[in-house]
Length: 280
Length: 119
Image 1 (cartoon, rainbow over the protein chains, first blue to last red):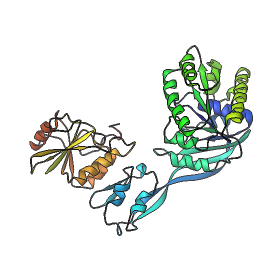
Image 2: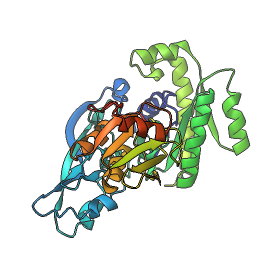
Image 3: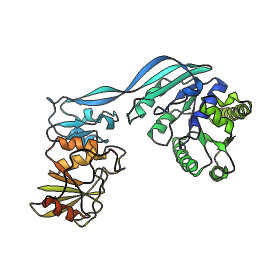
Image 4: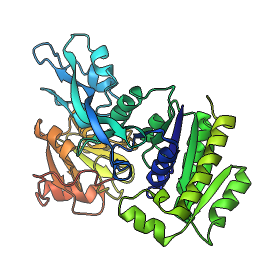
């Protein structure tokens, strides 16, 4: 069973909430925020295994290539350019779809795996820990997230920490998700990006609820929207200096008795919803 | 000789567009016919790769000269493999820039500018 934590806007507390919920229940924690994974700071795992992840990129045999232009015309991503003397390849634009090699009538294109990152697998105090780490300067995170997802054990309970935004990386992370927790903050930016992920979740037909983090007097920015759209509010984490201090030291918030109560309550509410509304 | 100019509109009096890959239009001036033709940039809205696609448009239309505001590293790499030369825009409209180029008043683009400048 996969419970995905996402937010739209970055910095609302996806990792804060997901690591604490994973720890309370002893669930597996999977960091799919591969451009900036930071769950390890709080869960302090020991890695036992590293798996490399890659994407297939075209390599052209210039002896066989007739410069017919079929690969250039069929590529949807501008990966290939035909100068009239040579086909140029921009690997960083390639999505690894293989259309170029299929469209080549001269068998001049081979697909060769290029490393884009690694997957670190291990355990933390309470359960399994896994994270994807994208190579520096690598623009395409989806192939790595796909590889991380393939290593997930479906019949166990997995807390999946998603990347920010609402684009391909988030959609890939949400695939096979049974329930989603949207962590937001009471600000105009929080609301704007929340609306975008709500659209994604509705299209993907994944049940979800919302947690307001750093809640304060402005909560109505979010709650007005949730009421209007009849979206389930799971709960709220009040703004607290104590939480900020613990976070800045890389300490789980549940180490503080008051915050522990907040998270135990949230955890029960989330699990109740997963059991009654979740897909699995 | 064919000159391709990145532009915001579709005729010779249009204001130029400093962006190369993400320009809305390309106007191609053919000196042998003294004619200006408009191309709508279909690659403008893709997430990545607009630069090399625009360079491919130049190659496919047999362009000799590009007039634009900035060439990113990928577009530059394509251009370097051809005989096409690129120059920085200086004037306001397409026509004025072509006139300046013909009077040899524009500066050649020899180094790629920043990537994603047009986003």
